[in-house]
Length: 311
Image (cartoon, rainbow, N blue to C red; front, side, top):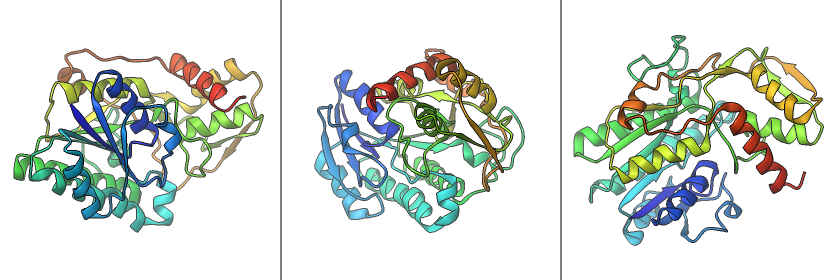
């Protein structure tokens, strides 16, 4: 199958590209390299097309020239703090970009998998989160992701476009960028620990997250592509095993020994607790899921960073 991946030089996209290529698929990556890196895919045999998702003509040309059979839409501008500083950039890179992908896919009914975010639940305090719970984004990033998944649902229902949306919960693992000011918490902490620098914790560390190892995510994506899953209702992609940040740090201490913690005030737009109800996910995949424990996933991630950055 010819599979196009938007944002394919990023963390999730590069991992997925490798899995799909090993399974015999042809992969075409579309990326503007704003937050991704060519070095993430240089070891893979695929076709890279540089382009901007905010430009409809460039997106449409990608669909036409590559003649893809399927699109995994991962291209986005992440980070809650970045969206608060520049909400327009988040909206254009997430919502407008998704509209361009959907319009490009519509004429030939090319299936689209959209990667959304658990941040759409926002100020809804109910745990665990189910897909039918009300949503109330508290950051421009979350609002842009909700707008994009709503567009995906609308195109599925209005035009019969085969779509599926997965809401991701705190994905971590190899190839996640640790060096940006907007990097996710796990890679930032790993880099700080290896460098014997203070690990910054926003809040008291008792906030909970449903961390999901990257290999478990790519397994779900690959199965949905190959089994042609379609759903106009979004699906949570996490396993309902939330842990506190302080418990994550205990795993860090076991691996690194002494670490230095710097607790600071919680950031604007951060959600206190997040946990998925995985019932829909389990039913869709008939239980055929991989669920890596947080300790095993972190160990594999530590070892990858140690090798990649020569720590």
